[in-house]
Length: 150
Image 1 (tube, rainbow, N blue to C red):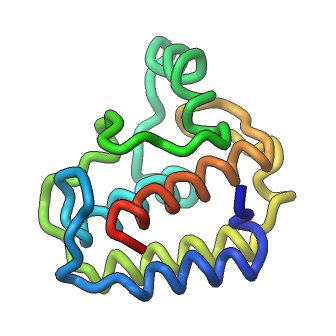
Image 2 (cartoon, helix red, strand yellow):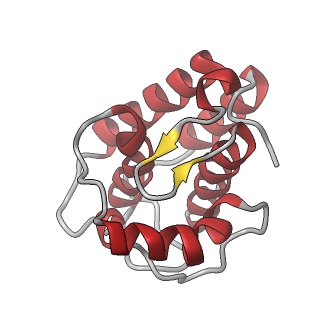
């Protein structure tokens, strides 16, 4: 799995983002490109911003027991997989704003590095190690960029 903690892979993700344009069409799914960027931002908002509510005990137990492994392993996501409610973006978004926010989050993650994430608590899954955090970030970004052909 490519590492979101290393500069060369961070630059690769950013180059892929920069090859998107506001009129890009998805190869699958319902989101437009600006919504996809906002969708990707949710992962980072859950780390850096106090914008999303922590799931209740029962939901967190379910997420840790059944979803965590799928999200944090190295197996790529399947097309048209189910999306968690917090990640559903139904309203229109501004392409440039969402892209710039995502690039800033990717850069911040790389700058903080793997030590920052090793043992850091996830809003949904409890404590994750640096590899689980990286897999979650890199796998999701790769999946969504492939959705738009980049």
